[in-house]
Length: 269
Image 1 (cartoon, rainbow, N blue to C red):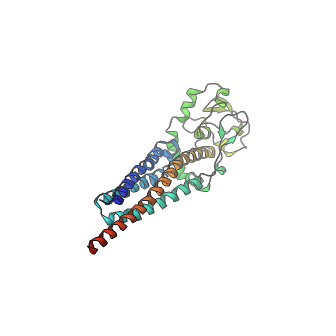
Image 2: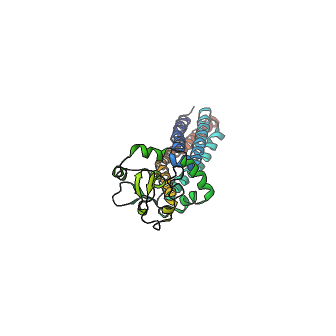
Image 3: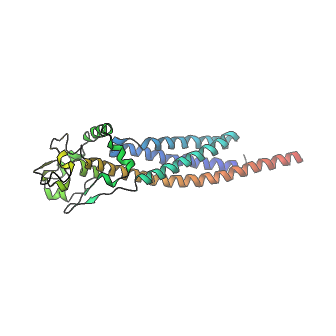
């Protein structure tokens, strides 16, 4: 086997390995609280990872057995997949560039508002049909019940670093002025007109603030955090894939040159 074919085979094996973190990122998203309820990004990531794995294996087989059409398929298909992966990275970056928590006086945790997030993310939770499904998923978790076990005193709770979903869904907004009894039970609001969420709060442990915009915003904040973490893995991987692909193109060109030179020598002799 010519040296260039060996190089192509090694490069495609590296591409096979690079598909693993992409698939892993998608699987990781399915285990995260926000993504497990929204279920949007993980499947495109997993599908892209699996396709890259299949194409890289095809290229490896084509290089090992010197099957030219498989190598050409690899070069074309991998280019398309790299472009799609780059587009996905750019998309995730653009829709998560906005979104942050807001500081409230004498509180360690942050408050979240829908207007702080991109329009695309807001549309994930704006539909009542979508939100009813997401709310059912959130209310089935133990994230709010865990707060009652961890914090007994008001000041301990106010000094807690809550997750965005705990801050948005498990308690009323701070600006409403509710009086703390325990993390999921509050009474005597001072200003119910401060925000519509002040009227949405319920001490019913199955309701709490799951209908509040603050809960939707907390979910989006968690979603944004999870997507940005996954995007770091995707960006590093796509840069490595581009480098591997370019080296593979050079090796394929050299292999074609070797074949032409060998045929020329055979014809000359």
